[in-house]
Length: 362
Image (cartoon, rainbow, N blue to C red):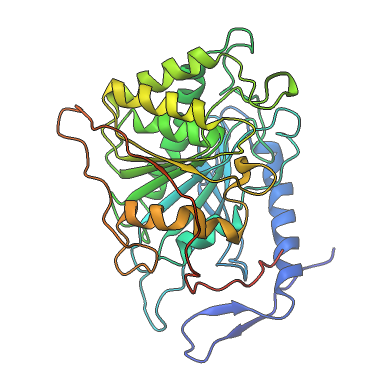
């Protein structure tokens, strides 16, 4: 049997190990072998699973595979974790805020999708000192299993329940990752894209104590009904569910939707944000200019930083951030009375932030 050996070298300080010239191929091979070992155990009742990191860190933003709990004790999640470098010579890891990034769903490809990465969105946060966790929820890709977060049918959807089931997975990840020695307690930011954005809003309705803010990129459910742009399965129910979430949410939220989003239009975004606010929640809605061929992909490349980055940096009040030029909106008053949502339209981009534009390693 062939044995794979990773070549490693020590950096000049002697304090950490970095992967050598064959690291990309070796790292990919290690991940493949890990998936093979774990594949048969992902949904078996009564199986013993050790949560935590599996395999070495990769050369790209310390990329590493983790196994995490889900909303179902009998089913675990696979996740990608990115981390900033710690100072050379430091024995203990720096405690940093976490960001949990939640992916969307495609009914046609959900079981064939690779592990979530969102490289440019993840890098935006890593560059600012966050540990990034990207869980793959039940019913998707290598995590596998039934799509339990899809409740109802297109003709009669239950968007509220769907969001809550997806939020069960996100909540389990938040709780587990906050126990790690590199996590800053109660400083977690939950981010979601598309159905992941909807799951993040559902989580906000629960006000988990470890979460300080929620970021919603193009969130919703039921988009592209029948394969048609901006056709929604149960649009009225989606808006009503947003109001139900907002009725109990006290966590500040920021929402980003592009003018040419083919799944959830700006008009629908306004109605959902208004319902959220009327329920008592805080929705800081930003309507962005048309982006690429489909604004639903607003987080997919470096150019998005200049469009949503300044508002997000302000919202999160990142100290000294080059994109943060003002403070975030005031949090809602105690008791959940909420505030009127701020709706802003960005009509031009800002200058480069100096974060670099090196293409990602694949």
